[in-house]
Length: 244
Length: 304
Ligand SMILES: Cc1cc2nc3c(=O)[nH]c(=O)nc-3n(C[C@H](O)[C@H](O)[C@H](O)COP(=O)(O)OP(=O)(O)OC[C@H]3O[C@@H](n4cnc5c(N)ncnc54)[C@H](O)[C@@H]3O)c2cc1C
Ligand SMILES: Cc1cc2nc3c(=O)[nH]c(=O)nc-3n(C[C@H](O)[C@H](O)[C@H](O)COP(=O)(O)O)c2cc1C
Ligand code: FES
Image 1 (cartoon, rainbow over the protein chains, first blue to last red):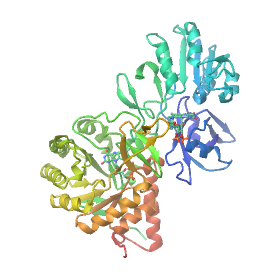
Image 2: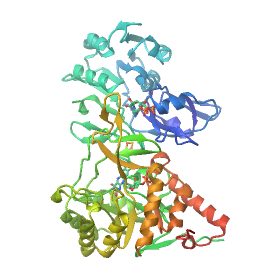
Image 3: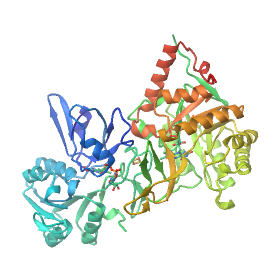
Image 4: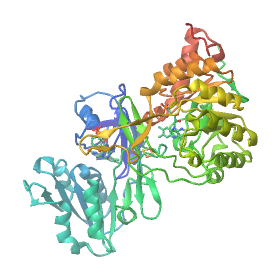
């Protein structure tokens, strides 16, 4: 979905998100959070793109919209990924539509970090659920695909696939970024535990306000207790999150 | 025509009757990018307790038909950190700053009220009595007339500020509690707090909220809130503030017409962080259209 938005979105950072809802309807009632997939400027206008999967009431309503329908878009919100100024290997681990913020990040890294190799591990339930694959293939040097049902690429979980290769990225010159279902991030956390690698993840939690006011979106961290995903996140260092 | 929007409630003068409801507006600063906070009649901050509180484990919110359930569990920075870290910034805002307070014992309420006596920049206290009393087997202060009266009197005895008591709708007769709280010395009443509710995930057969139950807010509760405000206005002689499901100026005007002197906007702030400014603008438009020069001439004009 592409949303025409205010010029302030040009400053968006990969990992930041938007809250969207219908302008003239209370269905769905609360705004829904989505990662920013891309931001483009054309003819003085700014367009924010999101990549979403229909999972329930709100996303079902969004999927029936037609060109020109009005939505309220709040953002860019939250803390984005830290992008290093130099780095040899950027490793992206995407689960399903978790590819959205990583694709935006890959675009940024390709532009801003010269000589970095960008590698993506992309997993989904089946080959049909590999939305966003074409774009990220166009940016990354390598995209390694896995599907749970084996319909394309490596059969099995994306974290298993990454786990086989992990030793390749065990040095100071690699950065790992991931976004996907909590279960996947938990597995990744287990794999990387006690390893000195830099890894940031984008988390999801139900949200009401998206701006830090309602305290509805908290997640457990190891040293700071419950913190807001919308404000202190959605991007966190993987080791700061309490996945237990 | 220059409209008069100001209202006086229990010793507190507001530039207009639109306030933000506790727990839905953070400590004010979260909204400063989205509206001019100086326009608001009052800002009521997130409920404050004697010590900081972590609140409940997630998930804490779930959408329901025309509303939401929350079980945030009164997470807050604690009254001292509020005074040190949040209040200095709020002092720069030209609207009434109201501290919402709560406790688990009467002594807690009293201590928080005492600490706030010395805090420059706080215009009034709003006492949230929708909390369990840990010393009395967890019964909610606000659902027991004797306890509601006791906590009101205890806070009134120590506080130098106007005291608003915020009533819970989770009672059989809200007018009974309202009368007791008035007799105990409350300067103002605000109502309603959230209505206790529940929601279940039928796939997993678990409650959607980790806390099992939560507080319902949003348009779903507006008719109930309006009915209760109307009943309470007719039962007491102190000013009443209407809260519950206000999404726009039309909703706010309904509360004023039944007799509320002011309104609080809660959940609507989540959907549109600038909604309170729109509500003030649209209220003024309504008054101009109807030829009403003073908002006080509209309050309590319900014809039955
Ligand atoms: C910071 C952030 C970024 C996100 N980015 C994307 C994105 O780029 N693309 C995308 O498709 N989705 C993204 N999500 C998830 C998306 O917000 C939810 O899928 C959406 O809100 C579901 O709305 P619904 O009304 O269709 O589902 P509902 O009917 O509300 O629920 C259906 C199912 O979705 C789950 N769900 C509901 N809300 C959330 C939520 N906030 N986070 C995770 N799961 C949820 C429920 O547990 C339930 O299983 C993001 C969430 C966050 C917090
Ligand atoms: C997320 C959330 C947190 C709240 N926290 C508080 C609180 O700390 N103290 C309080 O007195 N009321 C609290 N409330 C209740 C609101 O102030 C208000 O009474 C209620 O939500 C009804 O109004 P609304 O329908 O406009 O939201 C909270 C409500 C919500 C939705
Ligand atoms: S969604 Fe309201 S605090 Fe994060």
